[in-house]
Structures are given as structure tokens and as C-alpha cells.
Length: 516
Image (tube, helix red, strand yellow):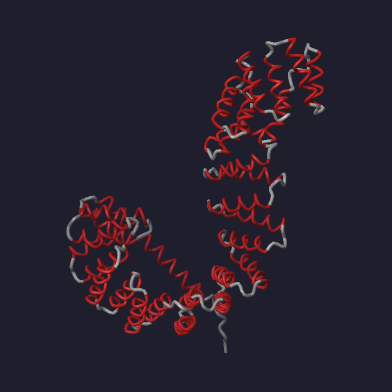
């Protein structure tokens, strides 16, 4: 605010160089020298000679403002406005005083009045921008950016706030331009770089966020938190290798920080370096042996590598060491189910249910195990019991609908899928199964609506494309049916190609063949 006042007060001295009144000339000289009390006396003498001069009244207000006598200053500005309604200066000055005392409504009125009197003057735009930023009216603030730009460039603090406002409004181009201007002049401090980095990350503008955090590490090379934040930004920007190097260095400084090792593991995973990722997760387990999440991360990667036996050992180790083994029992059951050990999986899921009977996930897992083992009736009974005990749950209803559909209880299945969709309209699979049952029941229009909703939620859902092509054919819409069938073919082809690429990556490149 002091910068605002200084810029305005200097401007107001212009236009009086050819003053006819000697007291006025002396007052201007004294004002420029910072002798405000003496200047005030000279301006008062000038007023006696020209009592109807609105510009002198304005200067009295400016001087009183410099002396900190805001009420007296505002009175002079109001008198000047009364004497000459066409003079923009008193409106601007009065607006600045109102702005400095947070009287935003009055300040806005005066700035707009000044703007109406001098449409090419950038100062009212500048002050309006400051006012709107102070009051979080970001859209209106950014509207002042163009006409106030020449003044904003001389006010890094306000320029920073304007860049932040542009980010909030998703105006990426303007924000990055302003940030670039600030960076060129090296006026951003660590706190501002951090704030911009966080906002850029929230808006998924990751490359620029990385640069902000990289600048922080340059400004504070010994800062642990600066390096950590840069590592997070690099992971977001899909640069996990550099992130992993940073995190590895940080783990040397903090060898007992389990969260750090977990993050390092995820960075190595993203870098496709599974051995080092496993080492990092193992270190996280050692650093925090009572936290079940550490074992879950470790076991998950082992499962992804088809190392189920080791995964079981890690989970069982966690069950011995942690006070709450609910999630670990679920993970153990899922491993056993993937190995086809359905009886053991069922026992693990049942243990989890007994530990936390109020959570739906255990019942869902147990029912899935029974369904995988071909025991749909048992799964149906488990889910029916869970529905009686627990609050409504969309996943519970979805699975209940699925097992009822397997048991050819179509009407009950449709009702269950409808409940799932009502509880969570964004569940694409519930819409899909509902559409499939509508189709099988000959209800083409409802089926069409459900499959179209699936594609809104999951555009790459190949089965929904296929089912919709069948619906169009039954409705006599051959052109759309063919188009949807072609989209299905393309999606399936793409999925096959991606699966082959994943398989190639998994088994590595060519191996040298030894020739006898």
C-alpha cells in the first residue's frame, strides 16, 4: 500500500510546474524535499489566494496524507471534488486512502469515478487490481491486467498476486507470462516460489512447477524440505529417475524416515527399477515395523512381480508385528485367491470380517472368492447378510447384482444395480451391467441410455462400445451400429498391442544366443 501511495503522490505533483502562486511554488519545493509540515503551510497560504482552486485542495489532501492525517486529507479531497467534478486526481487520492483503510466499497467507487474522467489513465486500473486482489475478486482483478500492465511491472508484489490470480482462474498463458517476468528480474523469494509451485502442481502444470521448486533448491541448497518438494514435483512431472536420485540422497540424511523410503520405492517403481524399489520398501518396513501400510506396499510390488510366496511371507511378518492386521488379512486373502487357494483365501477374509465387521470390504472380498470358486449361492448369502448389517454401499450392491445375475435372478439383479447407481452415479460398471440386463430383457432404450452413460464415464470401455453397437442394430440404426463396431475393433486392437508391449517389457529384450 505504501508503494501505491508513493506512486500516486509523485504523479500528483505534475501539472503545477507553471503555478502562478508563489506560495504554491514554495509548497511544491518543500513537498519534494519531504518537509511536509512547511509545505502544508505554503499550500494553505495558496488556498487563501485561490479558495476555489480544486487542485490546491487536492494538494492539501496529499500533504495531510503524507503526515498521516487521513480524515483531514479525505475532507480536502471531498472539497476538491465538490469544487471541480471533472478533476480525476482527488477521486484517485480519496480511493487510495479508502483502500489503505480497507473501505473497499468506497475505494472502488472513487477509482471508477476517476476512470470515467480519464479513460486512458492506467492508475485507476492499477488500484482496482489491488482492490480486487485484496478482496479475492480474482476475475475482476485479471480484467485490469491489460490496462494496468505498465504500472504492475514496477510492483513485483502485486504482479505476483496477479500471477496467482491467473492460476486460480486457469488462465495458464497469462500466469506463465507474469511468472516469467518476475523470474527475469529475480524478485521472487522462497515463499513466493513455493506458493507458485504448489499452485502450478494443483493445476497439473508440472514442468513449470518443477522449475519453481528447482529455483528453491538453488536459493537454499542446504534445505532438506526444498529437495524433498523438488522430488515430489519431479514425480508429478514423470521424471522419476531424477526424483529417485534426490530421494536416495535424502535417505542418507534421514535413515529412519519410513515415509521417505516409501516415496523412494514409488520413484524406483516408476523408473521400472523393481530391485531398488523392493530395497526401499524393505527399508520402510525396518524403519516403521508396526505400520501395516509398509508391508502392504512391499507385498504389492512382489505380487506385481509374480513372487507370491515372498509376498505371503511379508504379509505374515506384518501380521505378527502390527497391532491392526485387518488390511493385511485382506491382502493375504487376495494373494491366496490369485494362487487358486480359495479355502485359505476365505479363511483370511473371514478373519478380517471378524476383526472389523462394520466394514463392507471384507464381505466383498469373501464373496468374490466364492464367486471365483464357482460358489455363487454362497456369495449371494454373504452379500445379503452384509446388506442387512451395513449402511448402503455402492460396491456391495454392484457385487450383489453381479452374483444375482449369475444366478439368473434378473429382476433382483436389476434392482441391485439400480441401487448401486443411485448410491454412486459415477460407477461405470454398474451402469454397464444394468445395460446388459436391459438388453437381455429386450429393453433397448434403457439399455442404450446405460451404455451411453458408461462411455461418458469410461470412453475406452470396449465392451460398452460392442454392446451399444448391438443395441443400435436392434433399433434399426445400421450406420451407428457399424461405426460403434469399428470403434470396438480399434479399441480391442489397441488393447492387444498394449498388452504385447507390456509383455515384451516384462521379459526384457533379446538375449544373445550362444552358437556352438
